[in-house]
Image (cartoon, rainbow over all chains, first blue to last red):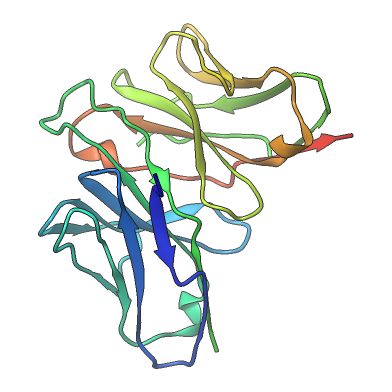
Length: 119
Length: 113
């Protein structure tokens, strides 16, 4: 099992450029997430998805877009890169049985991250 | 959402038990306690979680106080590979908040040879 795979691992962008961070999972998880982690800080949620075709904003969504056309893939798009978006980006996935069940306690599984520098 | 408080850093001798505390005094009855760790900027790795009973798995033990206001993660025989940042997180069980992990800055555990 590959788990959660993120590409690329490293990238340098110029201000104003755009790019897509790729994330794919092979665990048939319905929930997927994007986080960013700034130096010395904890992770902050950017966007999440509860299934194909459904996405919603997290804590820090400004400057980012997402789409979820399949269960496996959850790409993150930066349209106009800014220096403030220099960070490490982590994708995660989990299985949720939904419906507000008290049994819904499955952990999130994380990829190894994409290190993005914007100069 | 319940907040957690953890010491910034701790040291532990190799082979000894590492006891990492977490305070979550505002935890509500429907919130689980989760522990993750992050080794050298890799993606966070799930360790263990619990609601109110103590839990044990192949990686660690989780001790939750009876009032649920604090917990301790125990690594029984710490090795150098356990050097990492450890995050204590509370999240609701079920409902729309199940996705919501709030990461603090965690405890930086250094295992010493």
